[in-house]
Structure formats: structure tokens, C-alpha cells
Length: 151
Image 1: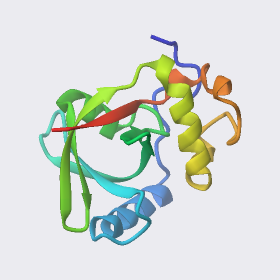
Image 2 (image 1 turned 90 degrees about the vertical axis):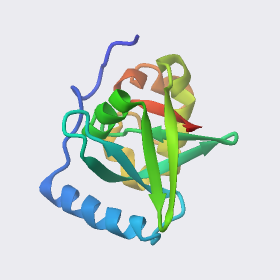
Image 3 (image 1 turned 180 degrees about the vertical axis):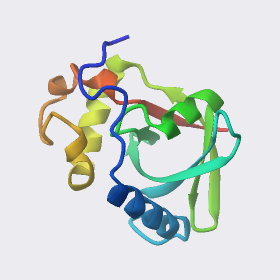
Image 4 (image 1 turned 180 degrees about the horizontal axis):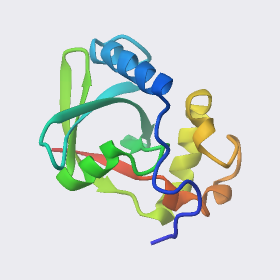
């Protein structure tokens, strides 16, 4: 496993970012917003309560991926503990199992994610959008990435 080089464990959202994420989550949950956005639902590893957060889904070669640009957040730790998540958009809910992507496979996915969602996530990456895949090798361990598999 690659040593984490960038932000410690994760970057906590500011109060304004948290408020924005809640509002965006409500809209995405209702089916409003860009098509790549989904509302991620995951059970808390300690409470069993259902938590939600809006996420940008990355589609590559017919596969779907979740990238955690803030690092090892609560949703990441909950998803790792349960091994599954729900994605919701409007009335549609889909259950997925998670396959953690090894660090060696992450550079291309991180590059595609950053290039696709630059305006929303560049602030969480020390590598600028448009950089070659190789630039992401050193920081790959800082960003959990999951392939979504049908449950």
C-alpha cells in the first residue's frame, strides 16, 4: 500500500460547504441537478443510521467509480465497513457492492475524475487538472476510489 503523502486523513468541509452539500443533496435526491450527480446513502458503522452525501459518479469503459476527493471521509469509512452503498437520484435507488481500487490502478481514474469535475474538486488535489497520469502516482494513496459492482 502506498504511503499517504497529501492531506492527513481527510479535509473536513467548512460550515458553508456542509450547508451547500446538504442543500445540493436534497436537490439531487429529488432528481434535480447534473446527471453525473447522485445521492450516496450509506449506513453508519457505529450508529446504523442512514447517512447521505452528494457525489460525482465517474463512468469509465462501462464501469462506475466513486472517488473521495476529500480523502478518507465518514462516508468512505462507513462504506468500507459495510461494503455496500445505495445511490439515489429522484425515485430511483440502486444498491452496489464496493471494490476498493488498488493505488496502482488509481492514477488514470484520478486524472479523469479531476479533468471531468475540475471546477468542483481541484481544491482537493495538489496536482493540477490536465496533468499526465504519472503526476497522480505519488498522491494516489490519499484518495479512496471504489468500483461499483451490482449488489
